[in-house]
Amino acid sequence: NAGRSGIAISQAAEGYGIEGQAWDEMLRDMHWDAAAEVAAIATEALLAEPPERPAVVNINVPNCPVGEMDGWRHAQVGVLPPRSIVDATLVPKEGHQGAFHVEMAWGDPVELPAETDSGIVERRQVAVTYVSELVHDPRDDLDGVAKALDGLLG
Image 1 (cartoon, rainbow, N blue to C red):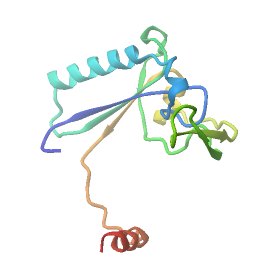
Image 2: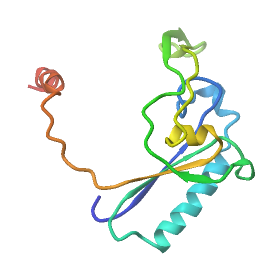
Image 3: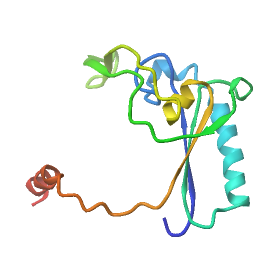
């Protein structure tokens, strides 16, 4: 991180599967201006008052105008998606040879924990998670990845 802090902003995408993974049809109803306003305010504040130790401020914004947001909360990183994928099918994209849409079949919605970033955004609040230093994780349970890369790259 070179001793500098940073901000990551995510805009929620609604109406289907996994939050944040929008595609063409879903982009029409996005409130990008709201996420941009939240990003600008947070960035200005971070620059005006940088923390002593560098951090990444991860901000997840609900898909609604700022005036319809119900505040903000500190969040934990969530690990559950709002729905799981039951099936995915490639469908040819008309007029674009070799290109495809992915049609998803989704499982039942789950109630996301209220303290997680996804759960907070689901409740129309801005979720803020502070991520500190990245550290090396000397794991020995990822041998399959190492073997696959060795096979590919030698």
